[in-house]
Image (tube, rainbow, N blue to C red; front, top):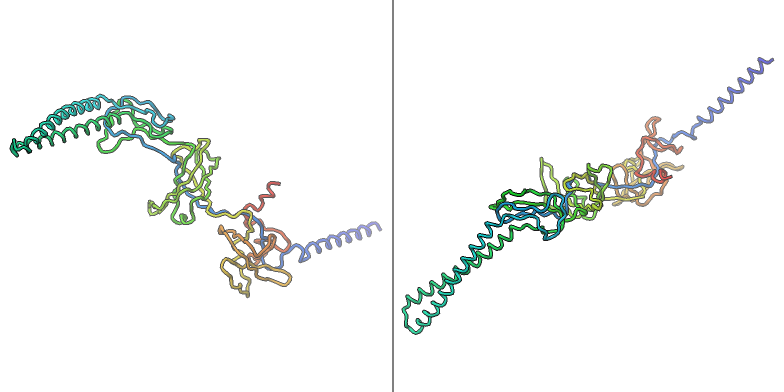
Length: 391
């Protein structure tokens, strides 16, 4: 009898287990039988960027040179020295220049004396000539001597002025307020200004205000415009993200190895003085962005159900497909920005609406089925989980 009870209990348990399996596996509860893959319209961000590399530079950088040749007598500044406009930077040996000035002044005095004598003589001969007391030849000789003396005197004045200017060039002063980036000479070194003005110092105006000169590819330059926000990094501070703004898109192109690029000037504030001249910057220019907007995978716009035709689309509008109790139907929506993966939907659909992205292939779901389950292999809209992460 006890054995029969055990058998009955076992049978009952098996029947209960079979019923549970039957109801759990019943179609229409957890399985997607519609034949389509879905995604849910959600909010996120679309940001289109152009990337490039560039070099960090001071906004104002001046090369200080000398217009006269000579030997560097004294240097008063060094690398990284902070200087003011008009501050003495260096001096050339002035002995030769002072001698040249003294000689020019002596010539000026001599020529002045000669000029004054010839002027008096010319005025006297002129008076006599008017009274016909001297010949025309004597008058012309006096006039000739006077004109030559006057020219020599004027030339001497110019020579003195030039000698004084050259002597002034021997004193090298800073043309701007700033910081000395480089010192290219040493005391005792001879500099020659025969053809080109030799550079003695390079001075940057204000290192708290820098710029980045970025080389943007010709395929991307059409998207770049003044005022666009920029972020960039430098290898010296890999964990820091620096901010900037496009201030100029230069029209002059550069071709190197058959690659055409254009220079884009980016204003880069540097209040902490981390950015140093010459650093290589990896630049990301934000050309378009739409934050907190409705997003749909771009592939959804390429889907059309079998045996159905998409309605005629107006400019700026695209067609999505959804399914309800009456079947599959089209929805015309206004589209905006796209990053190639996602497309912005500006109106025509509500957040949370499920749209078809493709036909169902086997048991693998590429999107979200009627059960509400999401496939982890579908791309996630940008920043869709931002609020969840904050929680």
